[in-house]
Amino acid sequence: MTVWNPEPLVNIILALLKVSRDGRLREDEILRMLKYTYSEISRKELIKTLMILEIRGLIRVFLAKEDLLVAELVKEY
Image (tube, rainbow, N blue to C red; front, side, top):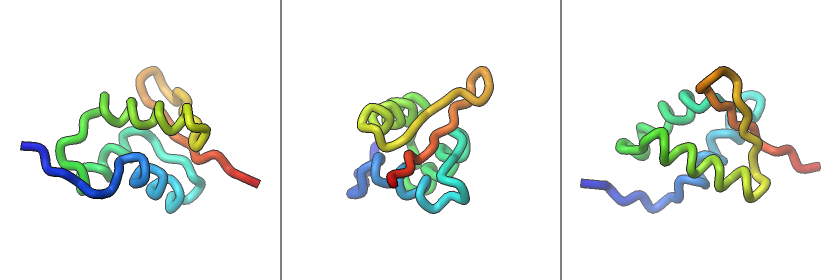
């Protein structure tokens, strides 16, 4: 049974990126941190949410290794 969380996933990912050292986190780090809040989150759901944030222009996602994504917060000046 899925547990409903009142905080949207996009907000939590943005908050995680904001508190990271350099505004950059690997996909596996984000997934590990999200397991505390969203216990049943899948890699597919995370990638879909990262894509939404990238389309909105809030983050950049790039390939670090063959199957490892890195999300980076876009700096606004």
